[in-house]
Length: 227
Image 1 (cartoon, rainbow, N blue to C red):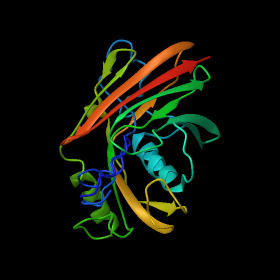
Image 2 (cartoon, one colour):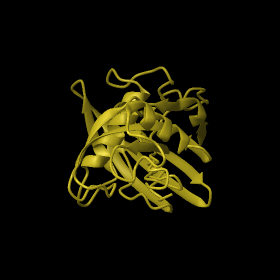
Image 3 (cartoon, rainbow, N blue to C red):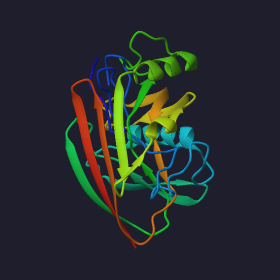
Image 4 (cartoon, one colour):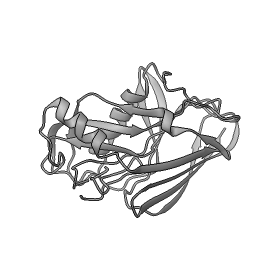
């Protein structure tokens, strides 16, 4: 299995976000049982810009297929005319990352957590077919064994209650895309954690995620300066 886990993951053992299980591990944010101090985390059945977790998990992967060239950790995505901060490590290697992003107070955030993706691209659906149902099963299977803890300003977020499963969605792989796929069009499906935040109050906030799959480990810290 190729390691592509992308804290949003690229694939890890199961291409969790790369190869073996042609799965791709991706990190996106979310939460259900909210601890004190994390009331701005969108509940599992909540929405950002009119869309829920499954939609944003798919958007994360679609955007990753399009990103080429030098990538930055602080970006934005737009849905229904609303800009949403998109926080994603520009690399999928398992290691320690630390980034600082400046965002307007109150702007919603889509923070990459660990998830797995399978697609119709060559080598990205290990042992599975390429129908929509096959890709969905592949994505879920490749997520087994994943562990993750996330805190916001020191308060724990139970991401296990924020797992999202997408249907099949279309993707376009740009030249030199960050997933290492050959340019072209395909279908993909994803399964895993996602974190949506309904905006921060003015000030400095910290999002810290530690994720692992077997011996692979990601330690990511985002310092968000909301103003």
